[in-house]
Amino acid sequence: MDDSRVNPAAPTDDLDRRLILLLQANARESTATLARKLGVARTTVVARLARLEASGRIVGYTARLGGDEAGRSVQAFVGITVSPKAGREVVKRLTELPELRQLASVSGEFDYMALLRADTTARLDALLDEIGDIDGVLRTNSSVVLALRVDRQT
Image (tube, rainbow, N blue to C red; front, side, top):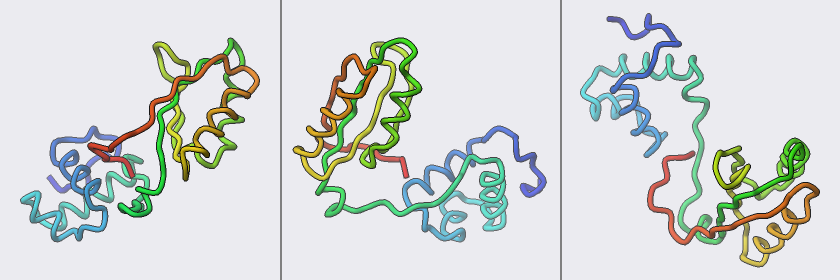
């Protein structure tokens, strides 16, 4: 089947998943190298990439900072519990923090889980104070990242 004619909304298959994994490891890999690693034609890789981009499964390619830059920062996962009906305002205030990398509403013990990256532990401490002072935040629970074992996020 010609991959360029595959429905963009079609679910990903094993080849798509392996292609995505290779791109997560190195998004600058050439299509010829990707094709060789996957054991398919280069045109197949090009068509798959076009379909994954058109479907919104791949939304961009980025540069990740290496050891020196990443090593100069401290990251923490912060569980945040908010009072009922305060979520919208809390999210609005959290998005104003430039150190906020991700924010997810979650089930379980917390209402939200935030990933913060600060230049220093002192700045992280100040951020946690700022979050705790947001109207509607009932409590936070922080875990500082000691080492990143797997990073497939761009």
